[in-house]
Image 1 (cartoon, rainbow, N blue to C red):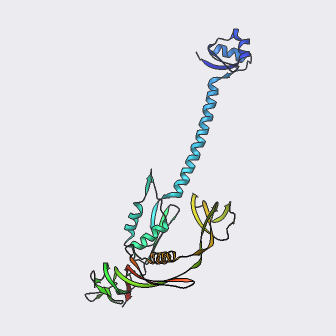
Image 2: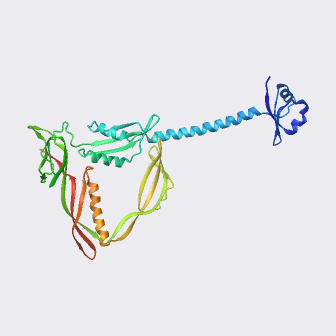
Image 3: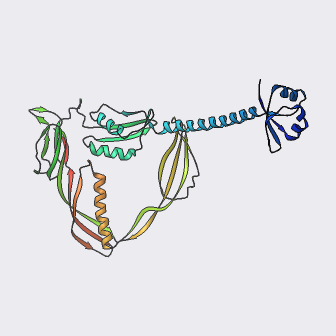
Length: 359
């Protein structure tokens, strides 16, 4: 025998109570909940008495909940797919077959974060490029960037031996005391703590009367004097601390923005990719920082610090390899006028002093 869970209005239930066989009766908010058999259900149907099957209500609620859960899970899966497409790494691609390809690939892949079947990486590619250029300074230029799910490594090497007949030596670019050296190709002509003059051969490309291309890195300790003049009053350009954000959309390479105000006459921009739909549709978060001119008055101590900071900055921009460093900055003398300070320094550095010279 089938058992039915029925819900009826209380007035209708009591009106027909003599004809209704009911068990487990509950009265809630003007409705009666009870269980009955097929005979009572047939009576209700034949007399067209209004009621609802409680199981069908539960099924409707369950279906609604399932539909909402399906929608939520669908949205989560869509966001996950977009996230994976935006930040995952499928492979590392080089622009040529170089000896350092495997080393660079291992270095990059060691930074991977793994999730299920995918690899992700959170890196500043400009900073990565700089580190690679410093580590592999024998190559002319190395840069990295990410497009879609691929990391591209671009290596330029004007010193490539193949078919170039680029024979020659590595010579000293300046006077120095040899600190250390690495020879990749050719014959070393120096030793540590040896004093060399500008033009001296450091690595020879002539090995047992066989001409080749000398390649290597030579580090030397150098001493140089430099004069820096600092104005007592100067106008400097810097960020004011004010900024605002807006959203940039890119559809098939066509850009349009939401919230851009054009409120700063001069500004610097930071750009962050937050959404990428298979390189067809991209969303970037843009932040513009106001730049303004500020009049700066320098005391002697301020000017001296700025002069030393200038030396450090210029050196960091000109560094070729990571081992290069400034060992000491010594003030030799200074002069002061009504409008400026002049400082004369002796700078002791460790520098890469080798340069290629063709035969």
